Structures are given as structure tokens and as C-alpha cells.
Length: 221
Length: 266
Image (cartoon, rainbow over the protein chains, first blue to last red):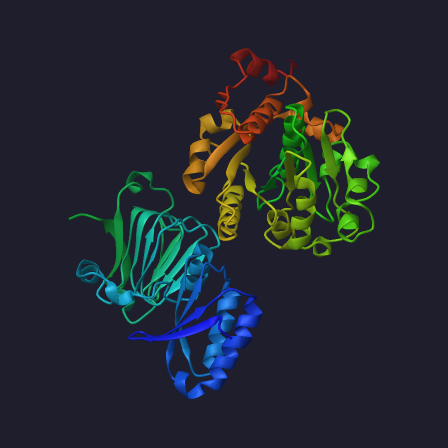
């Protein structure tokens, strides 16, 4: 039973999962949870899985297992990019140190609860995140981002973005270095790109809600 | 000798995966490499037809996996080139007859003996694709210069990345330079702009492909075909050579266009 290590931190519990078959580890985790039910109860847990590659369904099933024991899963720490993206799709944190955001970042994104993804989102890939989403890379046609807050794309935005799904609502903004989303939604409003307009394709733009309408403007200082 | 396993895939159907697999296999074998081509499109086998080996099939991939025959017995030797073998797909079964683990084990048995193992993936993103991608060391993604094919290629590249098989290399098939010039077809730059992966070959649209497919004689075996030359160049790039891209020119002069309009064959 020593393949599972549990540590307490100021951010809650961190469960380290070692090597071995995933199903076996899940049985052992369940045993830990039932034996020390009072210790875990009502707490929140971050899973440290090392280089292990996990799929979205696997992460979902861990989440369900924890919830059955009154524990909530809030973060997955992994070295594997595929595990990180699976976690991000479920809206889980992928870093255990969200409190180490510098003041500079905090000024731009007040809630601090943001997800930074440093790769290109390709067709069929979906990001769900309750906070802000920052993509360093392109968002290709067929990719989707659903964010509670704002969305910043440091690259070309050609996919679908739904921002402001959370409390921030219509205060959310969407911006990109090259702004041509297939469709753009902020809170309950929907807009689509004008059919063909090559003239403005290469300028950074920012979309926000003005007078109950989504308006995209050149991003200027 | 440790083989490189190369899977040829696309997402969308009909963009030329099988033609590419057949021609690359022949081109690599013609360069003196030992090559085995595996058709992973179980239930819709085609590679044997394109290679002209259909009438020699006795055993197939599923027979090997199920232990009905030995691996050697399912390998058909192509007599037109030196060291090229085909493992055909089963026609009467479906993709679930084979698992990704089966494919890994099968290719591991072949690795010591060959230089290249080429796997022709079925279209789609389901089990058949997963089988084809599981043993891959490298992935070649085939697309045509059409929005729908590029969109599917993008999806496939995402899946390949999440399997940690690298982004792969891109082949743009069936490019018509005259249409690109007129602005009626996506150009190479437009495709690369979206997919942002390494381009390993551009194959011009060539009627000779259809003729060769029907005859079961890959164009790479002919000397004068533009598409055949493109596949030969891709094969050399796969082998690590630095081959410059052919400048695709319209072979159409004004007089050729005129004579075609007038219905004169040339």
C-alpha cells in the first residue's frame, strides 16, 4: 500500500500516486479513503500523478470516487502534456501553486484563477475552465474554449470561444493577435465573424459587450 | 536492423492514404530498403488492389493475430521490386478483430528484419485509427488542399499529439497549381498556416494515379509521372535526405490549353 503517499499542505491534501496498474491504484486509493474517512471528509485533494498519461474518463472516475467519500478534486499535477490537457478539459487546475501568481498577472486578471495553455488548440479539442483562459498558440477552426471569465489568445483565433460563462458574465472580454473566430459568445450573446473581411484580419482585436451587443475593435493603446 | 514504423493517416477518407502508402513502399524498396506494408483498414481493404497483389492473398492480418497462420505466410512478396512485402487486411471482419496491442506485437516481430514498416490507416478516429497509430514511430498525415480535409487533418494531428507520437509530417496530395494560381484552391502556405507542422511532400494532381490504381501498378514504377516523382522525393526525405521540393509548374502552355479547348488530344 505504499505506492500512495498523502501529504497535507496549506492548499489542502496532496495525494501522490506512484507506479503500477491504474486500476490497482484506484483500489488502494479507495481503501485509504474508507480507512481514514474522518481524515479526508470534506477536504479537497490535489493528485500528483508524475509522468503517467491519463485520459479524461480516467480523471472523471477518480473525481467520482473522491466525491463518493466527500472529498473534492481540484487539481492534477503531471509532467505529461496529455494528462494536463485532459485535466484542463475537466476544468481542473493543472498547477499546484495557483497562489504564486505575481502581482503583475494579478493586475490584468483580477481573479487569478486562470489557465495558461502553451500550445495550439486543434480541431475537436475543447477547453472548459471556470476562470480566465490564456492560450499561447493558435486556436484552430473546430476547437472550442469555454471560459467562466475572459479569453486571451496570443496567436490566431479561428475557432469558437464562449467567454463569460461565470459570474463575470458580460464583463468578460476576448482578445487575440489575429482575430477571426468562427463564432464568439460572451455570456448569453452570440456573434459571428463578418463573411470575408481580409482588410482587418492581421490586427490584434478585442471583443467586449457594449449596449448588449458584442463589439470587436482594434486593440490599441 | 531496427525498422522505423511509419503510419500513414488522414482523418478524412479519399484523400490518398492508400495511394501514398503503396507508392512510398515501392519507392523505398526501389532505394534498396527492406519494406513491409501493412493494410490496417480491416473490412475495407484496398492496399492489395492498388499494389496489384489482390489475387495472391491467402492469409491476412486477422489470421496472423488470431494465430491461424504464421506471420511469414501472410506476407506477400511484390516481385516487381526487390524487398517489398504486403500484409493484407481481412475483408470479412471489422476493426474490432485487432487491438492496438496486437499491432505493437506484430510490428515488433518484423522490426529486426526490415528497414521500414508502413501502415495504411483507415479513415476516421475510432478503433481502426487507434490500431494503426499504436506501433508508429513516425506519422505521415495526408491531406488535400480542401477545407474539410484540412480540418480533419488538424483533428488527427491533435489526437496524434495526445498519444505523444509527435505532430507528424504533412503530405499535401492532389494539388492543382493552376487552380491555386487562380485563387480557387488552397495553396501550400494556406494549409501550413493552419496545421503548422513539417511539410514532407507535395503531390500534384495527376490522372496517371487513377490509371495506375486501376491497373494495380503504382505510378512510382513509371518514370515519367509527376506524381511518381513526388512520391520518390518523399521516400528520400523519409530516409533523411534533404531533397528540394519540385517547383510545380503548369505543364500547360497557351497552345496546349487552346488545343484542349478545341478538343484536340495531345
